[in-house]
Image (cartoon, rainbow, N blue to C red):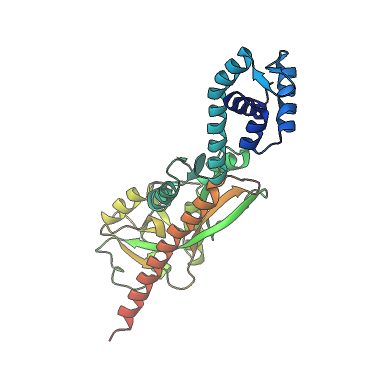
Length: 315
């Protein structure tokens, strides 16, 4: 295989007509240039210069090889710049996966910030529940996954993955506008023992958490509707068809009254999973932007809670 360093030196030798001049242009000695040209001649099996005691005239083969190698060396330079850009995170690809409510509330701002910082990078996003996306992270097909875990339904994550908590979403009770408890500042769950409930599908972390939350209040929830789409859950609540326990990211200003739970406050915790060995330079940027987006939501919930408490304390 031809050495690109030797080809670049050949181009200078042909351009300047001198080993010494080529060496000065490239930072080599004339002896080093001569040695490189001998190695190149050995590699192609033919002489490139007509040598005398004082000069080295380029042969027709040398001139043609110098011309033909320009495109190849230009492409190699371009490849080198692309590799440097990928190493710096200016280019390359980032593959993320997340669950539906995070995709709706957290990921858009975070991904827009990543693209703004690295406009030449390719950013991809997939959607799935935690159990559906973990294997992609473990296998290396996904750089990072945003997942959730309920306090009342703890789980173990693969040991080979790094787990960073982005935020803790408080669980809120969602009530219809005309519900008998809609004016309360906090909801005692035991007072909802006789109400119909709306929650996620069977055998989901949200459904298990609701059953355990109700058990702590000494009742079994009567679940009448199930959906993993929180916009559907809120719509059913707004129409007076039941009450629900919603994580913070599922809240919206759509006519549903949301109240904190009296006493112990359970949470759904949003986390990122990624491989310890992942060296993708875009990954730290994405993790930072995800943390920033989540911090904004957490600040919003804290402000809402402070406002509610201030209103309650006002005589």
